[in-house]
Image (cartoon, rainbow, N blue to C red):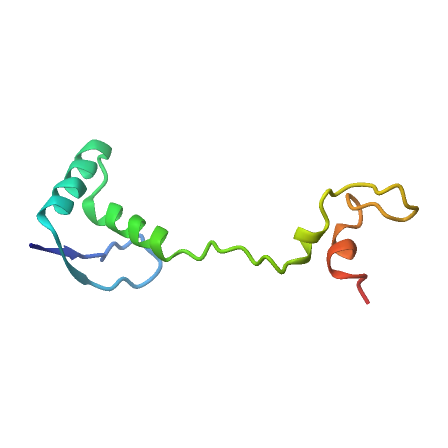
Length: 95
């Protein structure tokens, strides 16, 4: 296995970066290098993007009231207009 160093000390990045060392299989390293050559991006940038995608929280809260209101729109009832009053419809009137 090869040791891969991700050194992130770019002056244009507004946050502090930390050096990370990871051992990956030779086959994954070759794929990473091929992707970098194909896209013109540095391997460390591809590695960061992959790590971010893995760690990103994209889970949906199924208990959110919006999922109980479909179909959205006018129900024909007076004063029920989801297009104009969607926050009231979802979360109750503002007090």
